[in-house]
Length: 257
Image 1 (cartoon, helix red, strand yellow):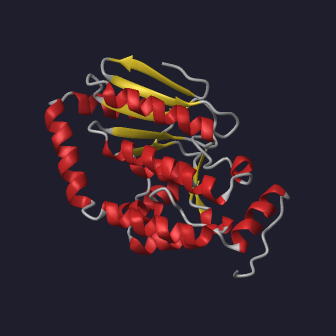
Image 2 (cartoon, helix red, strand yellow):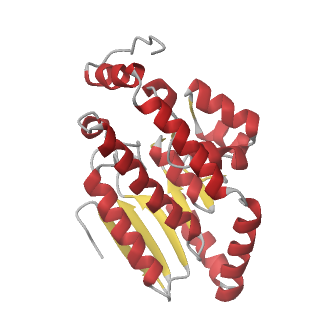
């Protein structure tokens, strides 16, 4: 199944690869998100699917939101977009099959938050991964402040969200943000999917449900807290300045307003 920006293919029995193809950096636009949601819905409805790999046909996995498009949004349009983004990411998190992120190039902002929704993250040595949102006057608002501490620990999560630092593959592996560095992350993702597929599908589905539900008992409340904190940043003058600075290709001047 192929859309303009998303390609889903069955590479072998019951293993699917969903590939992004939104040149140049797979920025998350309204159209991209619409096609992504449609593709995820089709995979969820496919009861024969045993594993999903999310990858990219381009140099970069996903550089986050399309800031040029985002800068034209009204306040309400931004909230609507954020809610739709969270809806898609939560679907991925809740899929009853394993999901593997095959990462390369830029894995930033919403792209990094998407990777957090997956069960495994296999990356090339060329990735640049991080959460630059505080440098744009907001916070990670698609599950990042909830999921990141559970994966890399509280202190590390605070460090990389507060500083907005972008890190390389070796550092990401060191702190547990990725699971493996590979010369060919897609090949290694397929290899892992094959290992998983050897085992009973109902058992895998039940194991994932049990692990996730016990690990994230307060998921709903955690995401509500994040959404409210995000909304606090959205109407600030600093947020407006960040978007203006982005379009003018300069550093923002923060006024704490």
